[in-house]
Length: 610
Image 1 (tube, one colour):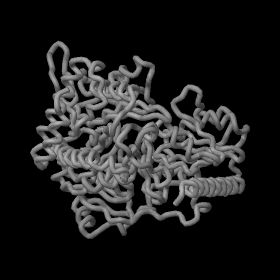
Image 2 (tube, helix red, strand yellow):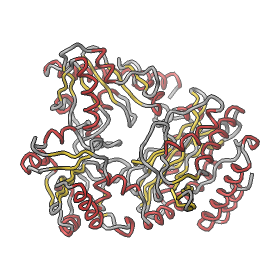
Image 3 (cartoon, one colour):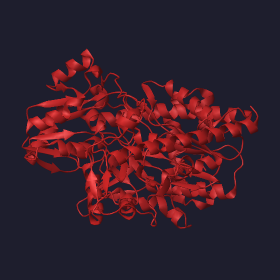
Image 4 (cartoon, helix red, strand yellow):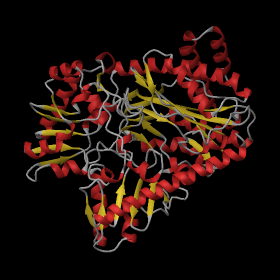
C-alpha cells in the first residue's frame, strides 16, 4: 500500500465514522423530540456504576465515537458537549473532530460543569433526560441542585438506546466461578457475617450492593463479564436472615449453585430486582449514594427508610489480609520476570525496524501468559512511542500504530491479572538518543516517584496530604500533571480501586496498613514526549511512640528495573540515589533466582549502582 493511499484510506475512515456519529446524534435528537426532552445526559457507566463496562452499556462511546473510559456527553436539540479529564484531552480532540461535539476539559478553571452548561443552554421549563439506571443517587442530586435554579425539569425513566441502538450487544452470559479462599484469605461466610454485624450496628434491615467488585469480593466469586476485570454482572441484597443474588441463571454452573446454597444465598433472575424491591417492603435499607443508581432508589417504596453512607465493603476490600499480601508478592515476582524478559527482547529487536507499538503489546502479553496463574491483562496496555506518550491513556490502533526505532523513548503502562494478585506498572524506556529536555523531564518524574515511595507519615494521614511529595520537583519548574498520583488496586479485581487515593483534590480516606496504592507521577508535552514511572506501594506499619503515636511507611512492591540511562544524576539528592540503588538491589535479589543465567547478567547490569 502506498503512503498516499494509506493516508486517503485513513481520511475516508474518519469521514465515514464522523458521518455515522452525526447520524446517531440525529436519531437521539429525534427520540428526544418525541419524548419532549430538550437535553439528554449520557455518562460512561453501567447500571452498577462501573468504570469499565461491558459492550452492551457503552452508550456514550456509541453516540460520540470517544473511546476513553471516563467522560459524560450531554446532547441538546442544537448542541453537544463531552466532559472528560486530563488523561483523555488529546485523545478526545482527535476522536471528536468533525462530529459537532465540543470537548470540555474537566479540571481547568475555565471549564464549566455540564450542569452549569445546561442552565446556560436551556430555557425555563425545559426537560432534561437521564437513564436513572446509569447515574448514581449522588450525581442525580447534584444535577437537580444545579438545574432547579433555572426551572429545568429532570426526567429519569427512559433509556433511548433501547430504541435507537440497532444491533446493540447483549449482556454477557459467561459462567461465574468460585475464587478460592487460598487466594482470598478470608471465606465468603466470614465476610457476610461481618456485613450483617454492620447492619446490626446501624439498626438497618437490609443492604443493597450494586458495585460489581464489591459483590465479587464479598462472595468470593469472579467472572468474565467486563474486559480485563473479573467481575460478575449481578446485584446482591443481604438482610439479617436472608441473602439474594440477582444474576442471569444461565451464568450459574452446578458448582456455583451448590456453593451459593452452602452460603444460604437465594438466586434470583437479574431482571427481577425492580419487582422484588417494590414488593419486599423493607423497613430500612443501607445504600452507598455514589455506588447505587438513582433508579434503585426510585424503585424502593416510599415507606422504606434509606440510610446513605459510603460503602463499608469498599474499605474492608481495600485492606489486604496476609494471604492477599503474600499472593501479591508472588504475582510481582512473576510479573517482574516477564517484564525483564520483555525488555531484553525489546533491546534485541528494536533496531530491526519491524517492531511497532502493537507488536510489543503482543509480545508482552505472550511473556506474561507464560507465568503461572496468569489470567489476562488488568487493562489495555498503553504503549506510546515518542509524541504518542504525551497522550496519557494512548491506545495504539492500526491507523495510529508506528514502528519503533533505536532513538527516543517509549512509555509502556501495563498490568496483569494473576489468580494471586493484580499488577499495574509503567516504565518509560530509552530506545536510543534523547534530548536534554527529555532527560530533565525523566529525572523530575523519577524524583517525584521516589519522594512518595520514601514517605513516612503519621496515622490519620490521607493520600491528598502526600500528593505534593510527588509533584514538588515538577512544580518547582512550573510543570504539572492533572491526573491523580496514585489509586488503589484490587486483588484479582479492578485495577482502579478506592476508596484510598493520592491526588490533589481531597479524598477523605486515611491510608492504613494493608492498603495498596500506585505511585505514578508524569510529565506530558504535546507533540513531543511523555514520561511516567509507576510502581505499586503497600502501606506498612513503621514506628510508634507514646508521645507521637503510630507512623506508617510504604513498601514498593513492583519488581522491575527503572531505566537509568536517561537520569541526570546531579539532579538527584543522596537520599534519592540511595533509594534507587537499594530498590535495584532488591529487584535483582528477588528476580535473578527465577531467570536464566544470561537474563540474570542482563538484570545485574541494569541494576548496577548509579
